[in-house]
Image (cartoon, rainbow over all chains, first blue to last red; front, side):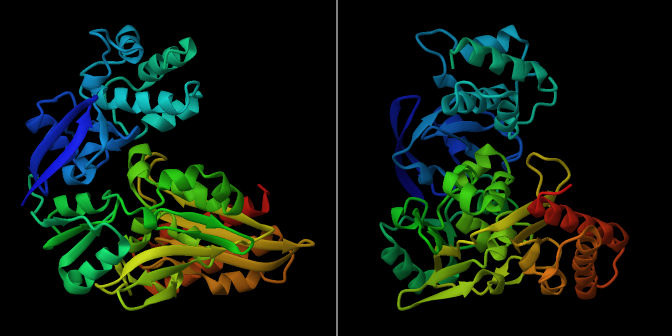
Length: 156
Length: 287
């Protein structure tokens, strides 16, 4: 069954027609072409599909698009400002927080949510905040360092 | 998408509309709030229904009142809210702690306490503390509503007394002034993993004597339960290490009495006892 849904993604307004069982993840990737958001486990355990919905980190594989009527979504594509990488993205590059890169969009969105809530998180709070995103390459240390660096500079 | 069956999506404007819809179509309808369990179940292909009733935006179901007597809250309060609310941390710190253990930040932001209850998973994190608090829940239909004690809500794993035309609309528990609380859960790892077992404890300690003891378990029996035989051992006694051990062993004995000796019993028996002992010690603030 088709449903009309309107929402914003990265500040831009969209109205889409989707099947009622379409997930936000699929709408973002297949309908809007925003393939930065990744599909991993599809059961909310790996966090690769993390986006911010109304300012909070959520798994876009566990949300039906019809549920986000009127919502505001931020994806990894929306982090860049005026063609420049965000401080978190810069720090991920600088600290080698990326290896295969598959978790990076989800990790960046989780990190964005952490700093949005608390610009000066403790190491524990950072670990807790990224616990819902699996990275099988880095061992997390570089990711934590990158987030800490941004927090330290007060750029979050 | 993928292997998720299709359905007709219904978004009521208010609770009355939702109840009207359920009165007509309850047996063919699944209710969605956060969706963190439902989408997973649907992907496994075990869910098949005609209508999906989305109550996620009903502000009538998102409330929190606290007074002298206790707390009443709406089922849409999220795990993130429960974990971070200063009021919950003050009134029922073990509930805040349990909610903070649910899944990940992403799951806690979407998942609701009402969903945790209604899904009726034996390992639902918030349920043992709520049962220890003597929580009551309001099940509302079009014509009438009823308050049910949470410990009588569950009939079997994933099964409850909720009728197809009813909806959970409120959650209430008394303020246990002066009580001490403990919550312990065992899981494969700290983050993300579902609880293999959990124990919630509330103790009223007056002048060194236990006046009231409540021990509630998750994933120990088929449904979350109070273990009254263990509670009795503690009541009107002055806690000492032997007594705590004895009461803890009693919880394990209850489990075996119910489920019989299984291949897993040699492992679970001491683990249940140890977890209970830790929860009691946490409540008492001793090591």
